[in-house]
Length: 102
Image (tube, rainbow, N blue to C red; front, side, top):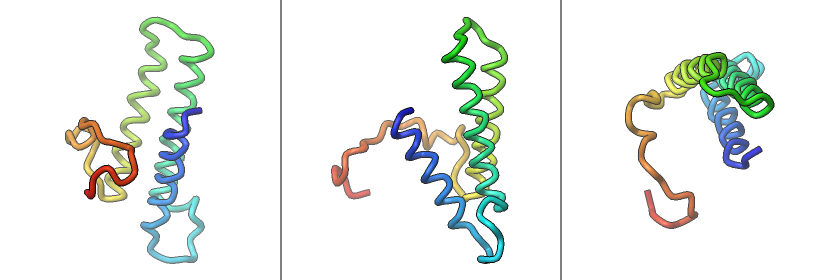
């Protein structure tokens, strides 16, 4: 699995945890963490479909992807970030450390 994808999983979980209201609720019961886990569940299921049995115009895989995007938008709203269709995520960005200061 791609390390950026794993980084995304970890950062979504950590960011979801940062939106805790109190310390008594288990992290997995937080709406933000539930949304992150649901997103990755859909993405993992879609990945299995397209890697193990690739098809042209796979409608089931397309539906999984669209469902994952809906869940991702729910997550982004919960963590107070713009939705996927905002244009914020269309721009290329550098992953080089220290290349620019914000």
